[in-house]
Length: 79
Image (tube, rainbow, N blue to C red; front, side):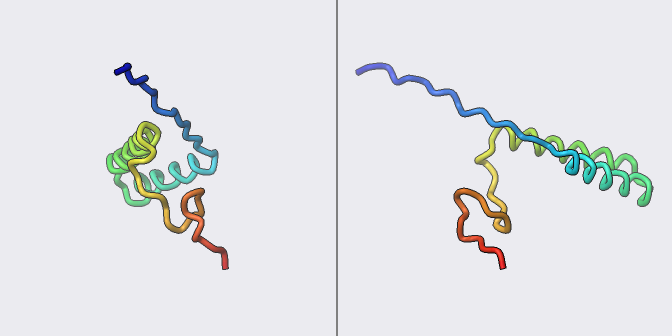
């Protein structure tokens, strides 16, 4: 029998828009300044970016958002 050819996983790239970064900044700013909890704001930001990194490494390990149309979720209709 012949050797099976190893395939490298397809690489994906996550693009964060300016609006996304602004929203994260607003969320963490609210936690830090309005709720007077800067350490929790740092933890929230770290968790958000760690999750983004995990999605980048393993995009199919997470469920699709049922509210957003995707290639595999075509049952979504706009009303």
